Length: 115
Image 1 (cartoon, rainbow, N blue to C red):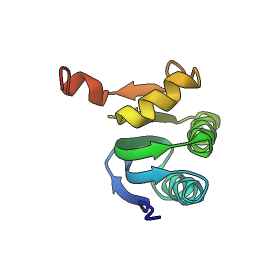
Image 2 (tube, helix red, strand yellow; image 1 turned 90 degrees about the vertical axis):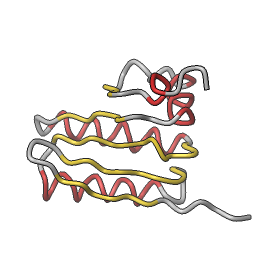
Image 3 (cartoon, helix red, strand yellow; image 1 turned 45 degrees about the horizontal axis):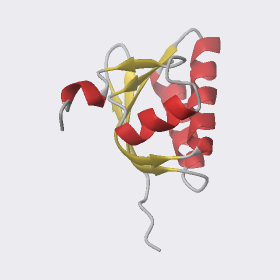
Image 4 (cartoon, rainbow, N blue to C red; image 1 turned 120 degrees about the vertical axis):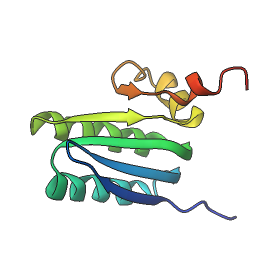
């Protein structure tokens, strides 16, 4: 079975860092996302934006990474924003009852209504 690899691109900005995430976040790839977030905190500060528009699948290990990253940012005086989460990500967060826990900017659904 072909697996969609996870890619994470770090894009620093003046007041935050964006991790552009693409592919599947699951048991096999979640550690990669966790490490990328920790590296971003170490090198670029604790205001983190996860651009999730290209995430095609996320399971409970992905949720765990998002929650842990949010907690880490908060403990260090920063923040985590989920930027343009895909429908797949939004659906998992809704099913888990976490859609209101995370700060979401520019939900993908708002830009593709009717499609």
